[in-house]
Length: 389
Length: 166
Image (cartoon, rainbow over all chains, first blue to last red; front, side, top):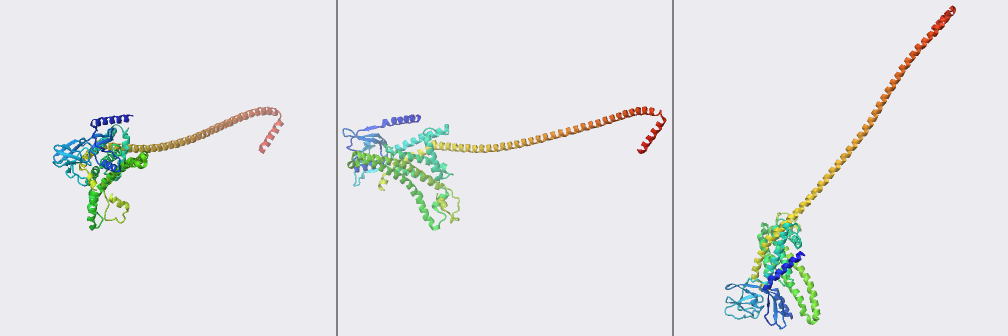
C-alpha cells in the first residue's frame, strides 16, 4: 500500500512538472498526421522510427475538421553557421516537410524528415531535387533535447532513483523491502550470470558497474518503447553506436599484453600467416565486434516496432476486405501476441548486448598461463576455446 | 545503407554519449558500488554464518563423542567398583566364616579340654573316693579277717598268687 502511495505521488509530481509545458496545438495543416492508406501507414511507421523534436502523445481531428496534436514541445539546440541557436520545437508547428521556416538570429531553419536544415542566405523556401533532397539547405549538428534524449533522461533518472534507494536500503537492513526486493535479484542475475562467468572471477568487479548500467538502460528503454509513449531510443543508431563504442573503448583500454599479442602477433602459427591474422584480428576487434553490437540492437528493436505498428495498421489496411470489426479484431489479437514476443525481445536484446560486452571484456582481460609452442597437439576443444576467450 | 547513414544523427550521438557517461558515473557512485559492496558483505556474512554453524556442529559432535566416552568410562568404573564390592563382600563373608569357624573350633577345643580336665579331675576324685572307700572297706574287711589267723594267711596267699599272675 505504501509503495502504491509513493508511486502515485511520483506520478502526480511528474504530471505537475509536465503540465505547464503541455500545449494544445490548434494549427490546421489539412490532414497532417492522419493515416488511412497503405502508403500513409508506411510513411507513418518510418516517421515514428526516427527521432522527433517534439513529444507527441496523440493527434485527433475535431468537429470543424481541424487536426489537433496533444503533446508538448521540446527545446531545439542547433550549432549553426553563426553559433548556438535555441528555440522551442513548437515553432515548426508539427511540420516535417520543410514548409514552415523559422527565423532566428537572422538565420532560416526548416525541418525535413526529422532533420533540421539551415537555409542559404536569401532563400525563402526549400528547393527540392528529384529525390526530395533539399538543395539550398545544409544539415546542422543538432544537439536538441529530442524525444530520445527525453527518454534517456527519464529512464536515467528513474534508474538513479530506483537503485540509489535500493543502495540506501542496505544501510539499514540486510534484505531490501518493497520494490528493492524486485530489483535485487535482477542485479544479482547480471552480476552472477553475465558479468562473473564472462569477464572472469578475477576482474569482474571492475566492469560490473558498466554492465549493470547498460543492461538496465537497454532493457528499460526497450520496454518503454513498447508503451504508447512510443520511445524508440534503442532503435536509434546514434544511441546503439554510442553504447557499442563504450564497450569498444573499455575492452581496448583494459586489454592486457596477451590480448594484444593475440591480435598483433598470433602465437603458435607460421610467421607468414601472422600479418594476415593481425589484419583480420584488428578488423574483428575494432569494426566487427562493435558493429555486431550496435546493428543487432538497432535492427531488433526497429524491426519490432515496424512489425508491431504494421499489425496495428491492419485495422486500416484490411478494413475493406475484412470489415471494421474483423480487421480490428485481427489487429488486436496479432498485435497482442507480438507485444508478448517483443517483451521477451526487449529483455533478450538487453541480455545479449550485456553478455557480449562482458564476453569481449573477458577476452581482453583473460590471463593465459600456457605455453603456446608445445603441447598444442594434444590440446582439446576446451583448451582451444580457452585461447579465444 | 544510405538511409541508415542519413538516419544517423551525430548530434544525438554526442548528447547520448554525454548523458550515458554521466549516467554510468552516477550509477556506479550512488547505486552499484554501495549495492555490490553490501551484497558482497551479506554473502560473506552468510558464508561466515554457515561456516560457523558447520564448526559448531563438528564441535557438538566432538562433545557428544566425548560425553559418550565419559559415559562409557563411568559405566566401566561402576562395573569394576561393583565387582570389587561384590568380591569384597564375598571375601568378608568368607573371612568372617573362617574366623567364626576358628573361634568355634577354638571354643570347642577349649570346651573339650575343659571337659577332659574336668573328667580327669572327676576321675581322680572318683578314684581317690573309691580308693578311700576301698580302704575303708578293706580296713573293715581286714579288721574282720585279721581276727582269724588262718584267714590272714589264706588272704596273703591269694594276693601273692594274684601278684604273680600279673
